[in-house]
Image (tube, rainbow, N blue to C red; front, side):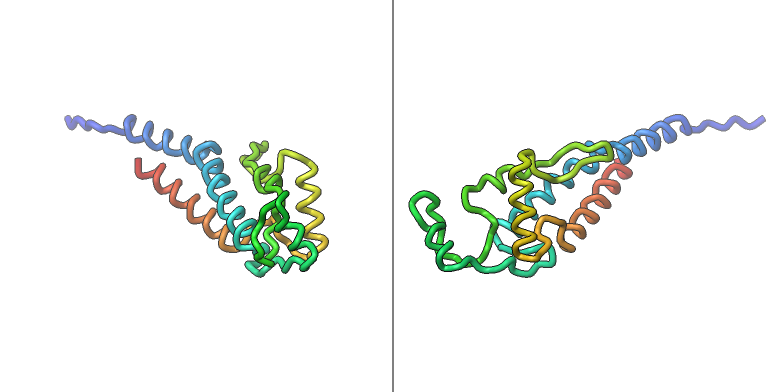
Length: 150
């Protein structure tokens, strides 16, 4: 008679735990959303680029004077960075949704501002860029690989 000893219970338990982790939106989606919001903030409010990576535009001389007034104390840089009082970029938030996490504004007025800028400039600004989507995909793959390797 042959006796077979196995650790199948241990192995299957580990696999189940790995699958649970991969299915957990807190583990996968939340950190990706926080990373992507940082990338979007830099692209829009620092670099002044739309979702295609192209410049949003340039401020008019008149508006640039207003931006440089003591009330706002902004630089003389003419590139549009969709920021005057910083309310818009400070309101960016990672928001839990039924399917995971999204990026949006907590204040409806700031959403209206974002839509107005996109409409006024004829550009899609507040969607993910290709670079941001690629980053999210790479980060997702990394998190899955990390969960499986544990």
